[in-house]
Amino acid sequence: MPALTVEQKEHFEEYGFVHVPDVFDPEGTIDPVIDEYAGVLDSLADKLYSEGVISSTHSDLEFGERVTKIYGESGEIHNQFFDFSLPLNGVLPDTPFWAGPAVFNALTAPGVLDVAESVVGGEVYSNPVQHVRIKVPEAISPRDDDGNVIGGVTPWHQDAGVVNSDADETHMLTVWFPLMDTDVQNGCLTVVPGSHRGELLTHCPGYKERPGLQIPEHLFNVGDSMPIPVKKGGALLFTKKTVHASLPNVSDRIRWSFDLRYQPTGEATGRSVFPGFIARSASNPDVELHDPATWYEMWRDTRDSLARGEQPTFTRWDGSDPPCA
Ligand SMILES: O=C(O)CCC(=O)C(=O)O
Ligand SMILES: [Fe+2]
Image (cartoon, rainbow, N blue to C red):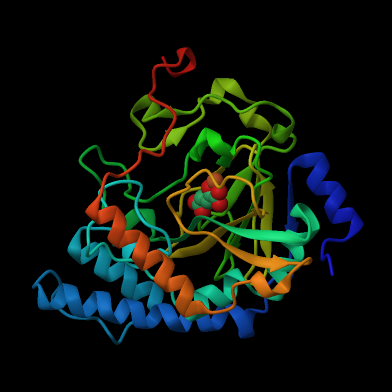
């Protein structure tokens, strides 16, 4: 049953985004993800401790405080340990990733698939461009040599700009949701209403010495942007052309979110070497993937084959476009 109300669908079409407060069951879907990641953090802590990188596994601390402590003490952001996607380059046989059952259950939860179906139709494909993001407080976060917070703010971009041009005709929907309440203090997303009506804008890598791929602010009306606080259980939906960014985490706690993408089955994902799957099929439910172990194996096999062979490049921007000057 399509889940967006008529008003929500109209808002999405008019403004290029919609905030839906009740997509996920906080206890039934999100808490198991949080519990699963506690185990992932245990493994990371054990590894770093055995390597002598941290002084203690800090197992007495709550998840967010423990991540913050471990990232701070090691001077590094270990987000790849938790992510359910692979890096865009430099994949090695032992590159870590986490594609566990609770994460799979969140990707395929009936509520989110209902929402996805109401935007992309009855044949719903889980696009492999998806991430978990754990952002520690900026005040105490490890920084790079230029003083930038590593894994800090996400600069202005359109999701169409971060995938390859083979997905330019794909009807890709982004579903962003937090594992905890988010607000302007801890770095929720901010979107530019109506920006989805325009074209794909020029993205510039490392523009004005800031890390990451970003749209220069002179190409859109940054003054129109509005932050969208989302609580645990809610989600922010936007189109692949909606201009968005994250705010910095200036709170004293982590900011923890998932961003997932869905599209009609059969359209290009923009990262064809990564494994997607049929999450829902109105016409033939037998082809839906319901087994988390299979999903894990797809990512493991992808990691192993990328580590053995040539690795594709993912970005279509080289910074030579005039707006990047
Ligand atoms: O969570 C973030 O900081 C960025 C998320 C994002 O860009 C997305 O969901 O497409
Ligand atoms: Fe994005």
